[in-house]
Image (tube, rainbow, N blue to C red; front, side, top):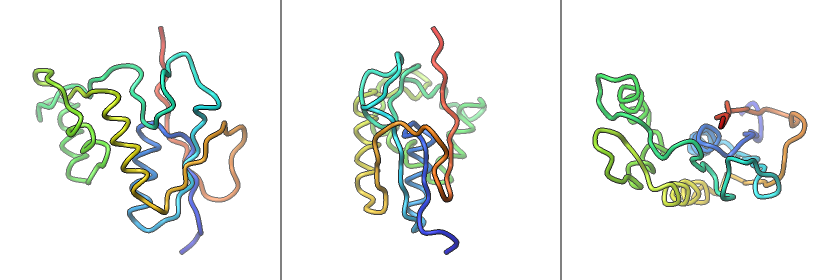
Length: 141
């Protein structure tokens, strides 16, 4: 293996999925999450993958962009999409979730992988070694 450990900065949707996918492929992962030590006005919990902008993953219709993306994610084995389906609430043609249940399911998936170490605290500089910085959802009021 080229490296001993991968550091993923951010325990949101992308960071949590990234950490899980890497762990499932045999990598040791350090998942860095700033909360609960540091929070933002958008966050209300210290959970991983907290949905702050909406509880909807939008349309499930395969002829929509959002639905097509979900179909592709399912084919690729997205663990977070599986969590969303298990936390789903009625929402017509959309995939909406119970936010608390969704975060709890994601945290359980992360915890079930012994090769993921969650480290709480703000990252103020790029960590040494190999890392991934997922894009953040910017919450605007």
